[in-house]
Amino acid sequence: MSAHSVPRKYLPQFVYGGIDGIITTFAVIAGVVGAQLSLRVILILGFANLLADGFSMAASSYLSSESKSELDGNGVAGLQPSASKEALATFVAFVLLGLIPLLPFALATILPLTQMMTILLSAGATTVGFALVGAGKAYVADKTLLRAVVETVVIGGLAATIAFTVGYLLRGLA
Image (cartoon, rainbow, N blue to C red; front, top):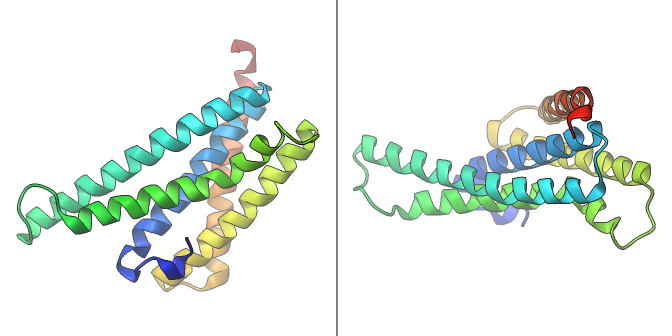
């Protein structure tokens, strides 16, 4: 699903879900790598985070949109079609973009990739994903492309650095 196949009114939720999906999934991976845990742990925690956090983001999007609609007097309590579609856009983006950092680790279960190659592939794919999300953000927020891409890459990199550092410092607990 590309940004062009998402109706413009749902693009902010798609970008929001995508940014959070790729950043949090890569942060989980960075934390596990920092803790020097196994590939299996990366996959278990990565996929658990991907689906649970994706659902949480979608539920939050739905409840927020429904509450806004009720406050604006544009709807009644209950299922709001636009709230449901916003939640779906958030979830789909979260999962699709959150898969990017996990795919190299999934491939490493069937291909002869070293741990370092897998980590580098994940970091490279994630950086490209950050750039794509930044481009989507530029489109939605009417920012310059360069600024939005740099912002997204830097924020994602900082989140990964924090997670890696925490994992590394607490590696003895595992």
